[in-house]
Amino acid sequence: MKIECEVIQDIIPLYAEDIVSDESRKLIESHLKDCSDCQQELAVMQNEDEIPLDINSNGLKLVKEKLFKDKFKAVIFSILLTLIISITGINYLTKPSYLSYSKDSVTIVERANSELTVNFNQQVANYQVEKELAEDGLSFIYYISTWDSVWNQLANNKPVETLLLNPDNENIISIYYVSANQTENQLLYGKDLAGNGGMITLPRLLLGGYVRLALLLTALFLVLLFIANKLKKGQRLIRYLLLTPISYIIATFCIKGWNTFSYAATRDFLTILLIAIPIYGVLFLSLDFYQQWKKRR
Image (cartoon, rainbow, N blue to C red; front, side, top):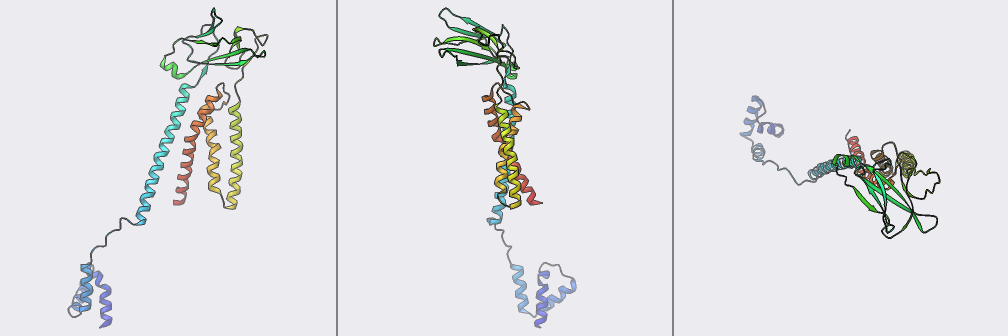
């Protein structure tokens, strides 16, 4: 009888779910008439409540946190990508296009009280005036450059401007117009210090030096990454350090293209640093997404 109970109890779960054959059902029901133990076993199964889901389980919390982090990273990635496109577009619209000298665009006027003014016509969108102390230590040499931009051409809002060069009655010995395309500077006023008008203002090569430094650091980090892969140590840190010079190189290309010469090195350098930050963020998140995808494979 004991053996029969064990057999019946093995198939009672199927009977409770009504998935047994007719012959098995008859056998079980015949046995249940005389066996209180099996009757009790069936009653427990039929009255058993459904086990509730533990919605606060650690596993579910981890899944929710993972989904939230992935969504947050995707949003940050989109924002950074938008910043890169925006900064690149703004740089293109406002990028100085240096103007060659013409008598109508820039004129020097000397007033009765020894004040010198420079007038810019509507062709000039913006200008830069630099001065340096002459060899006598008392007089100054001025360098004027002018430029236009795509934005100003579209806006078509370039009023004539007048600039006072020596508001404190400084003695100006020479005023030069810095010509574009590495041509000779044009003497606008005073003494020609070059003697034959052959003075040339060269673009600054500072940005090219920074790019070469970034390339050198990239090569160095690649070597360190190769060594770290062999030692199975410090790979993650070196990868993130490697992204820094790579970000600067990409940023330089976005702002300057293939030509790193610049007459406005400070402006270009600051813009490169500005766009390099979101570029680093995009590369960082891209590397993180790649590593997660690699783990799932």
